[in-house]
Length: 409
Image (cartoon, rainbow, N blue to C red):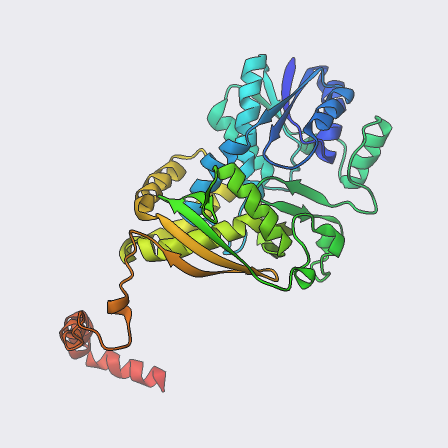
């Protein structure tokens, strides 16, 4: 394959650090490093300088934090997307945005190829390359991990040292860490022993819940049509709100998750995730929906959430199905306006109050005390009609009903 100029999705981590000299040696091409600022909290100017020092003639730092919140995080939260009931999709969600940013730079720079540092065992290779196929199918794709001689993190570290490229990983602490505005994930190293508890020094976004403040903290989060717009009465843009929630949630040790998940490529893998602000946001949003979305619509939306999460996890962000889901979810969010009060304490977050001008909760209807709006005698007729199919089936098929009785005994 002939390549003249390649845009590399560059993070400054081990995999992409060694990719620059390898691409130049293998293809004799010019390497343009693309650094997407998704809120990883690093000195990205230093990352840019590292890229150029490693052999890239130019490196672009693109701030996409606001787009990450408004165009990716908020729609995912609104959809109730949680992979396998636990993972809040931090890494998965950032990849299509990083790939989109990379493609935009590649087209502007006249590149004829795209490259990423994802391994051949992971999910990210799929996420990047599906985005490439959707946004720039005419560009060539290079995935060094699928073709070079390096076969593990130990060899990658040696290659980097041989070429004078500093990397954050080491033989003593070879974690694979991914950070952004939504979460911090850690994999590999000692975590590959799934019986071993994660060491305390692994966590970067959250305090140890055991040493978190001894007093709970209460927050009030405001929403307008499903979008978070304020905190404790102060109106904030989504990015500022996300940063504030991360700091507060992290202080209380909220959002830690240690799980073994099913990768798209077929294997199981362990990930340790920290999503402090995201856990607060998801909890509050779910509780506001509980009082503002009608029952049948709410139940159907619950069916979409897991499938939406799979689309994100499987790299299908730019799929027609995800866009169709967004259209449905957006219609459900028209009434999701109000405020939720949450309590943060020792690693937990719980909604303890909710209010909305669109609330469907009626205290008079729900009360167990005497009321004047609900005639309990009417329930008898409702039950009779609701049970009509069951009663007719039982009368028509008494032999099946006897069989069921025997199974119960």
